[in-house]
Length: 564
Image (cartoon, rainbow, N blue to C red; front, side, top):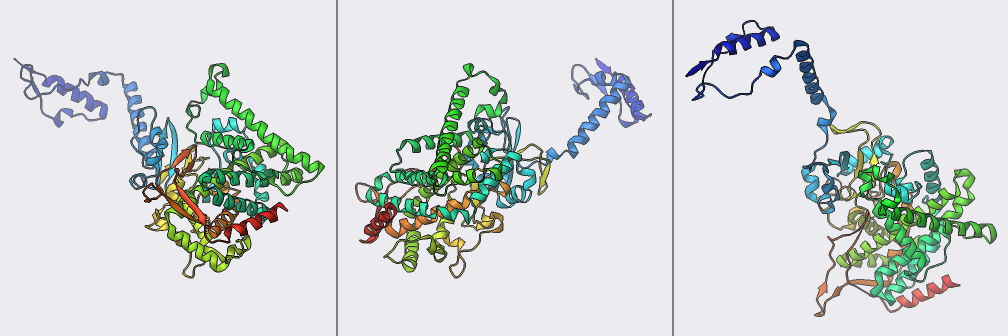
């Protein structure tokens, strides 16, 4: 039986028309007939009566709320966030942030643009994948991005006194000023004798016992930075207790600096009593050991300075100018510890990548050795005075740091206020991270061959060393960071790398290992061993031999001078 609902439908239209100010609502549609059995001419649409029968004031409120939400969403800055990968429920993009193979891939940058948005457990995170974007936001607008987000683990380990991770403020300014003035390009020249001595010892050790190459590199990096920071005696082995202790402290900090511990995402965990949290007992124990180590080494300098006097050192400089910088002894001790950690890890890791590059690209090694022969000859070792006439040697160092940065993902900054870049919204409080790897391999700056190892990209037509692109602060890379957070020890690192690599190539040939059949075993240049925020090369065989007969005797004579 047909059931005519037209009268009721028309009545509803009239009522709706009355609400909307339309008095002839039935004119907008014909009557509808509905057959219960065949559903001819009708549909089983949801019943609109629940809303229509609401009191008029409530309907008005709901309509106003709906309009407000629509307008707010349409105009919201959040709709203009940078491109974002597909996220998962609850964890958001946490997996993408920790997937380093994907994060540093060419696909990541090309698919999600030079600026990428990640939602990490509800925390907005902006990743800068290009030099242009990172330089603009972190360098030219440094006043808005100079701060650090709260890093709980590194804060505990460093007692809040780790300069790289410390938030911007009065204490940070005092400590930063002290470190900066002690490590200017001119100030670090006082440490050239230390670096020269350590470079000579390293090359001699590599020619005598090349199988323990990495141990020799770690010894020289630790010995040099301990001498520079604390006037510590030259180390004879990378297995000495002080090296093992400091190496352990460095790696604890490197792991904590990744910001991937659970407590970083669930800050309430910090309030759990230690007896119920093993992780908390362990990290506070590590923090206590770090504090004891830093204070012990610092107090050693202080005692020697008061009694017998010491040679120039970073810690001695802080003590002598304590009133000027207004630093407490604890602040000075942690500055020294930070100096050791950053200098040791950067120098040792870069020397390991440099060694791999020399083995993987023998033509680069031969060209550098030809330059050394032309400038230095074979009757003496290269010195710092030779640096201006060795542009290719210095270009190699720049290229190694660009091509394989020790730290591929920069330490996080935080946006103090809402910001915009190229029409994309950067919300206040967002974590801002420079993808150092992607920036150093930016094809718009370094060319289509940005992924290749080519030291000549840093040279001019006449072979002179060129200043780097302006986006790199003329360094040729951004491995030292951006803006007011740029590494204060970069001049020390560059000087150390120059004398070590120059003396190594002057005295030795580095070749890839061979298998039992005599076939060459080229190193894997695309694999990384991640130690927290630091990325080292994988183990590889390397044959190290003297370049010419007199090399080792000249090295021995040089070592005797240092021992006298």
